[in-house]
Image (cartoon, rainbow, N blue to C red; front, side, top):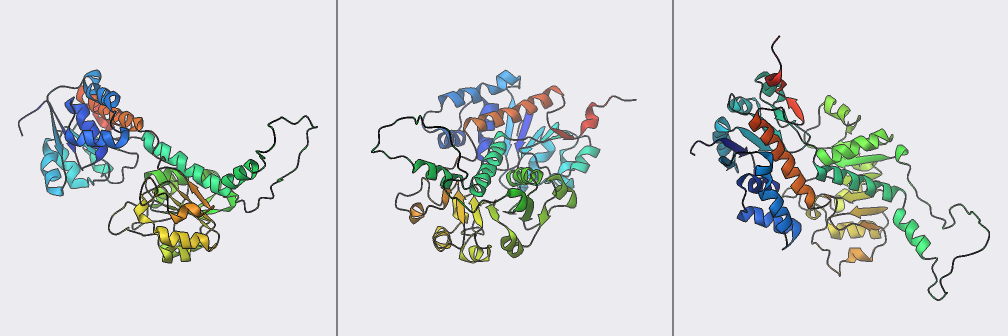
Length: 380
């Protein structure tokens, strides 16, 4: 690779990183176009215009080298010549952080959690590390929280109870009768008080961590399961959550929320065996990927009454097929894969990263600085 004014290394392959690449290159790319079509459909001229003018607006140089790393060898080779490293889930232990010195101006985490980076080594070497609270993560947090609220308050049943009052055979007219009150006139039962409930998260990452913190602030007991438990400090940072073995989490949780990636190991992870271990009347929530849930087994668990209900933002096939037996059930709360919010959020996130790259290029402290601040400390 010939010397360039700025070398940006993307430590892993990621669709959103391909948007950032177009911003840096000031031009559309095949991978970037595929991403734009996925998020925006065939008409993506507006976001493309914003992306391809981004670098000039931010004052970035035109001579930028870009490396995408799809394996460890490529990453290890690229780090010594990187001015900026952008990553999401790739790991930068001490040896890799040291490989960035002394050239690196910024290690940018695409997200809030930085436990995949050796922060202590970066701080000692005065290599700036910055994190980012993504709009899409905040959106997911809002959505998952809303699903839990809706299930606990039986909002869909309550809405339908009111709508059933309408008699289309009568002319529409506002009543002029005296005001009157009647507590819970629909007779709904089965509400859950969150402060008296247990929510279990299978997988504890950025989105689930934000939700967990909100629930803890409301007095909810929060359990989580993941292959490697969090440190006590990290658990405290999420408001005081508790690790539990999977079977224990399933048996104790009133709500179980799935937060797993989709791969061969997680194919139909939530199956009949998992549902059978959940406490009777509990709710299952999936906002991750449809393939991690066995829809046939879910139908059986809901139809039998073993589970109280489900909230699904993702499904195995999207849009959901019109003949899916799940659509016949009245104890599922549906949303059409919208937890991540609006596609424009992805453009904002790309600009947030490029803004920090521009700050690094100018020698300024990045937003979200979590390590390496000594670079800007005044001597004495």
